[in-house]
Length: 270
Ligand code: PGA
Image 1: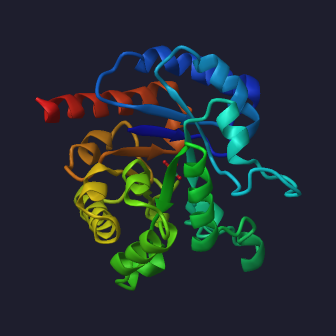
Image 2: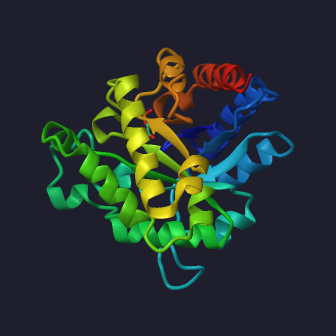
Image 3: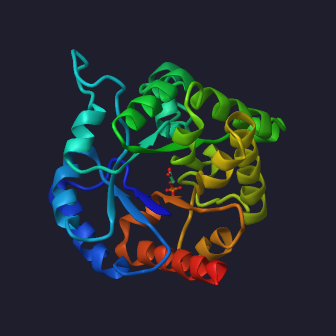
């Protein structure tokens, strides 16, 4: 499964042109699911542009309450009504775990969105309660990797963020392994290492929710995925797809990634 995270890019008109350019390029490709996650302002319009196509719509975040006095927030009910299937939850840019901290910001300002394992857990539960599929992001910072605690950090995030869910709920989810140091840096994680960590994520899921959930959950890799490295990453057995940032803003590059996924998935299913 390949998802494009457009982050805070594209006005409504720009988003619609990108979706219209992309749709036909990936239409009909077998064994791969595609989702586009535009900014909230463009969700409705992109959903309309994708109507009738096989490309799914996803949001980049969601709040956990259905409605109420929560200025600026968007509820799962609202996302569902406009046709979202997926929602990214707990992206490191929202957890305040930036790969490239803006030196001009104080640490407090850098944590402006403030997502934590506890809020990610509430958001995942709310999304599932409204039949949205969470794309839940986990990943270690450079400091944590250098400190040799990657596996512990990942296991902890998986356990906390999925706490209280049923095995059936977890089985239908998507997790994106996104090492914070690889996001937007042009420095993707090596395929063998991404494959290894994703194996760990699957084990953590199995440990908490059983074999079936571990086998069914789809785990993507994210962080500087391009049309150049997609084949190498996606051909690893544990990697079920990619969450693509920068390269998803270019219809031609993104469709090459989707094509690579389709070719590999077809080979595997032979
Ligand atoms: P990137 O972003 O592909 O631009 O590194 C990935 C992500 O943040 O999901």
